[in-house]
Length: 482
Image 1 (cartoon, rainbow, N blue to C red):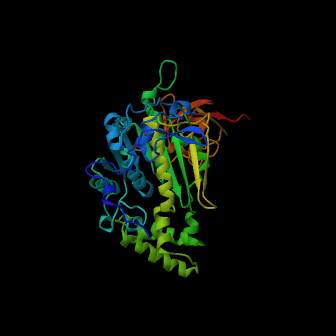
Image 2 (cartoon, helix red, strand yellow):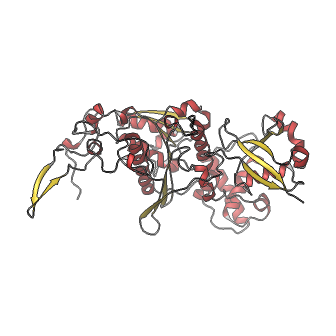
Image 3 (cartoon, rainbow, N blue to C red):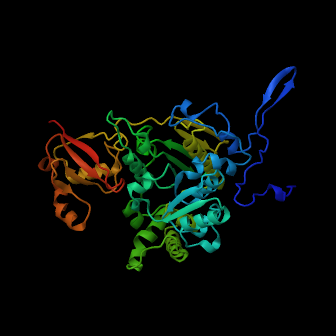
């Protein structure tokens, strides 16, 4: 039987709901003739911020600041923040308001971090409600960021959560510079690459070539997939960045169009056929709304009919949602664990009260429950955090189009770009993806051999939607010697 909580245990006014630690005075006791000091209760964040740390940030592998405990102990965290205001004054950005984002915002609200901005471009779907606890059925179809912010602001009067409904790419560099910490709860590799490149581009260097600490915006990257999750601390230009570990992410699974259209063998083939080929044919003037139950039901029905035609089992509505929206399996308990670790790192980064994670933690809940940490090393030739100009050797007969495909597929460069545009260091535009007029003008270059367009060893400047508009990559092309 669970006893009901007494009314005295509930917060009143603007007090933060934390554990009762009214007695902070240490006392002495004698055990077996030896005198021992009894430490203060370990019930809440106020305890940690009010006493000297044995493991402060400056003693760790990633020192970024010196911890100064509050000069006096306080009974509750909200009283402590009056004289130790760093948490209340810090601006924290949460990227993503999904299963992980909801847990992160809730944890921030319980940790005294009052000024939070949250950005998300998605609207609420009925399938979100089983784990994204800030949303209700009446919220279906509304922006996640708006609803999450309103829920927390109404429930937690000490919070000021500002929502931003839209794409992270629409925000300027100066906007990202305004935050003391960024917590990312994204399920998109593309979005994480872009955010990583943005924060790396914010870092400025002194006359000795060292990063200016005041321009570094730490990123805590969290992710979960079913019973597994990870947390990573990225100090731009100091630790390894997200791009350094891109090799560990398998390329997105794609199905050949000919297989989808002619010889389907998997339920995913039937679903892809329904929304990629049939939808544009039946609704040429209407874009598929992935958040519309009616649209998704139509895709499911068409996929099911095709599956029956080819005797393929396994087409379900949930699988249809997963294929169309590229949904990653989510478990509420995993999200809670990863979000707690993310906010824990945020508190350490803002207050310097403990050593920062160095720099990657993996949680495994599939075969038991355990976690391990290790250091993700920087790639010496990372195009984002080291600004190293990469080199590639190709045959002289290699066409510009073949080079572009190599940049997209990975190949020798492993860049995995999306839609690269290329300009020579002499200022000659070889190919530009947009605007359409410039793309049409440079399209004839695609079939030309590289030796007709550039010199041996010439450096090319490459831009791509995977990175902010002011970020470019350098690539030196060397022709094979015959």
